[in-house]
Image 1 (cartoon, rainbow, N blue to C red):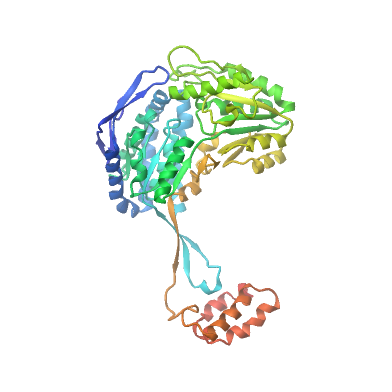
Image 2 (image 1 turned 90 degrees about the vertical axis):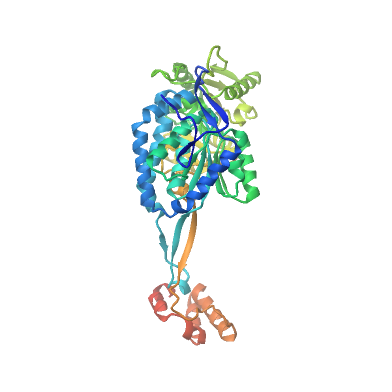
Length: 544
């Protein structure tokens, strides 16, 4: 397979002075390499986006949607090559790459292809204020300008597509920086978009080392930054954007909790927890990283979770029978190993896993921990690896309280067979997404918003709410201007004061006092000369 070798700016390959090598985490061998831009190259990409913006912003939404349709056709035709590249660079089993990365990316394209025109169409609004009832008012959803999109390595297709596609269909132009660890996948996405027919400069995909990323934050032509990644880098992005008073949409870390009620279905719950904790080797911002199970189900649940975990097949992600591959980077494996080691030293027990394996590849075995304590780092800090700590709680109340006792709030799940308990969990769990009897998969639902509370980030992606984060929600008013003067224009004076005095109880009062003000209002010159009687008559029922 031939991989892209350069950044794509103005739909042309743009070589850079640096070099980024992509490493297969299962073999530690080089998958491929590409040239890397520097800050000057990143600025050139912003220039390309700025030049393309006026024409793209004025392009009809129907034309933008047609390009999404061609992009979807290309991705569908090449999904096998894309899924294998995701596996080679990130370590996911190929089938899992299709399921959790490519599939959501294609769903995003389909969703906005089918619904963007409706969601971006002008929305008329009838004025509530009686004096404004003659207006033709409503909301426009106009593009904002040039945006930077900076994405991580854990989902190198699904996450970029969820941010790039709505931003483009809304009429913005972009500079997209994929993570260095999965840079080839990012460039392949950019190449697909180029072949789909986006005009030059609308989407620019840059291979860029992290040290040069400030060029995408500080350029005065960038009006918004979409960043997905760690809390520490998110703070840096937010600070740089705050200096220029531009918005940053941040999807950061998670320490997601699963609360298991006493009446939960054991088999479904155990299987759901194992998948939710270990999919993508636990490298998901929405992975299950804490489990709180009521005492009456705890022992049976732990036993079944351990059985299922031991059945997982760990190994070469290119083989069809593999369930769990390696972590994507050596550094991430070190973080996971350190957290587990400290937990074990503090009294936790590993019922499976918990030890660094020998040999090639950045593997770490799926690990189930018990006897954990609230203050342990494994229960507080994001692990981003295949570790499931399970804690016994005395009641559902305690489980909810512990789940909410976190500075993160991305997603959470509750496990129960009771509709009443489900409603309570949805209401009381503090997170941007709450699922009952499942976890993680809400990311693949295009209508569902995605984003969290606290240090999990700012803003929402996906669906209509996500699209409207990427536009100027513009309230517009059209008064045909047929009147020489409105009731509120100068001059003021005693007659105007009488007019306002009478209008206020009529509009906002209750009972008979409203009708008592009618004579006072009608007796003013301001009413006789400047109030539209036809508008008043048409709205008399609402007024009275």
